[in-house]
Length: 433
Image (cartoon, rainbow, N blue to C red; front, side, top):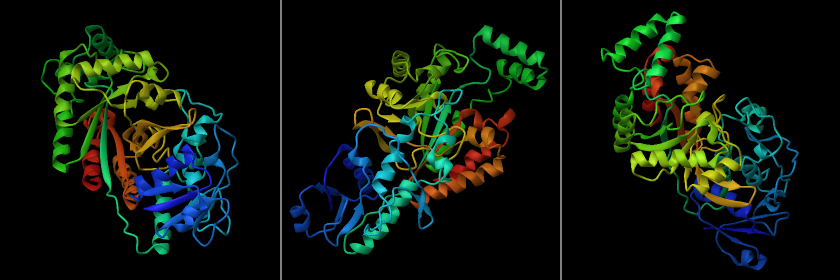
């Protein structure tokens, strides 16, 4: 156990120290605010305040963890070795910046509470983030900082027994379109057929007929392939099913179709299942509740995992609604347009609500990369995409973090724009597990 002295133990202090020491470094900590208790302690100890008490391991504190609410903060980026950092702490500090305030600023998504311009989908954009502006979006800098802190702690306290966490990989699959052609309503199928015909998409028309008459398998029916790979590589896999009503943004088949229900039930037997909340649930708790209950009626188990469709969430409102509905895990923390770490960490963390200044029970699982990002935004070929995936995965593996990816069932179809992407998924599992 390492004893932490600080002049005031705030919810922010407790939260970020627990994340860095307990979740990343697997080090037990305790806090004290009495100088005499700190001085009397014979084991490893660290002070976090404005001035050192003696010759202890000292980190000079910024004011951020002792404030409440949101304030405009001037941030100047410097370097700790080769790693960007901010909130410099002066020469007396054992490390050159306030790692705890900087980590809290990033992981709480403090900047997303500040005034910003949203994109066409009402989302905070990667381009406005500190990580993108200073080119560290593809580095989990909080974890990197934590490991550099660990090096300094080992140098100061060499006799302490340090544990080491293990790298993990989680494959998540979004099911926005369970099938390309099958099980859609007559009106919808007819409309899509006419549209393909008018646009002279003869290949699509022929495939549509072949699937409807059971000559060919529906190209998006890749579920057995995903399950087989899950078993082969022993990879944790989570399917997120979109079960909302049809809109221009939510185009899955209706849950009234028995084949869709059976598909979900089958996946529950082989993998974990979560809800992909539809486009308009971002600020509509009644719609979110309806979809949660709809999925539960099929699975007969509580829905505890969520991902927002189009990654549409607004802080803190969307997360507050998930908590109200007793959803325990969210997998929306990332950008569709960029690879990397939106919250600058590859360690699952609990959402800190800056409105109420509390750590909530909602656990956030930040993903690092999506198939759509690679193909549609970065315009990478399958081969180039594997290189990007490998680069990001290596950043996670250096700090023994959790590497989470987002693919879609159609990504493995080898159909139309997804030709060659089934190999990407297969190869990714080989080098990521």
